[in-house]
Amino acid sequence: MVLFDPYSPAFAANPYPVYATLREVSPIFHDPAFGMTFLTRYRDIVAVLTDKRFGRVRPSAARSEARARDEGTKRRTLPYYDRYVRVNLLETEGDTHRRLRRRLAGALGPKRIADLSQRVACIAAEIVESLDPGTAFDFIAVLAEPLPVIMISELLGWPVNERHHLRPWSAAIVRLYEKDTSEADAERAETATREFATMLDALATERKTSPRNDLISELAALESGDGDLAREQLISSCMLLLNAGHEATVNAAGNGLLALLRHPQSLQSLSAQPQLIDSAVEEMLRYDPPLHLFHRFATEDATVAGHDFRAGDMLGLLYGSANRDPDAFPDPDEFDIGRQPNRHLAFGAATHFCLGATLARLELRSLINALLTASQTIELLETQPEYRTGLVFRGLKRLTIRI
Image (cartoon, rainbow, N blue to C red):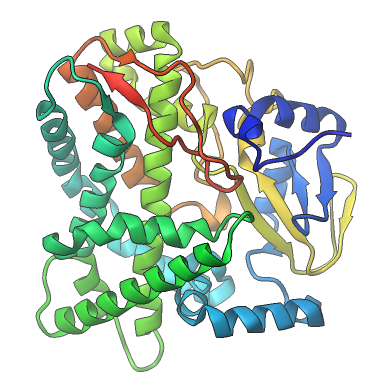
């Protein structure tokens, strides 16, 4: 028996020994507390991600009466959350998914990201330069959180005087992705979704008649009466960009910098060879990824690695475990900023590969470069920085450093 207790402080501090044991003794296991079967090995997870018999939507015929009643209750008690968060790009399949993804991919194309490159670097540098030399500060609060909020808000075309809402809204909404939530968490998520949706709706209406060079204007121009892009889809897509992109970048930045600071030789190598920044960022994403769990449903009966699944079964894909699988990565517990190849799963794979991956990588490079440009010495002031408990997202509560 392996103690799988993902909401314990011990697991939050270091889940990787548990993952290693699971890969050895129980690589595919069912946990009734979660109502899903977990997969831990890289090859099995990639097999599911690339198999069309598995998707993000549970087939309606497989929903039990109890689950249907539960979902009906949630729709009554969390109407805004159910309307906008549960129907975003991540939660769709087939033609709807392909159409929405094509629209968002066009809006987040290479040219737009390239145009943002210099802006991201400038913002990161400005924040670092504003700090008093030798002063201790929380990297998460001072750098990792503000940068993606600024970038997402500028990308969307969000009013500057309303930016302060975005981070709290995002945190409240994604909190419900975890299992250990309370009624108070649900109420906060519903309130955040309602307030976010109301403001997005107003902005989309305004930009439809007075467009600007921003994503809300671009998506508003695509709205049509034939359902090609409905207002509900516009709102849910913009929410997803904030929630998925922002949370992932904040967590990846904190986890990645901590890994660098715990491996001073790697930090020295990166300082001496700035051209290693791209591979260093990929290794940060692999070594301690910001997203540890993604789920799929079996849309029909299927077998994976000798394990039979029935249509409607939920599978938990443990990306955090896959990224440390020795069958996929030589010396997986070593932090190697020159690792090649590095086909990690931090952004998923196949149909649902993260659309914001390019922007997240750009922000991570800018954050690390800004710190190294300001100082060749980055000092970690906490022996054991504390991780938030959670299984879906993995991130630090704070990371106190000095440059």
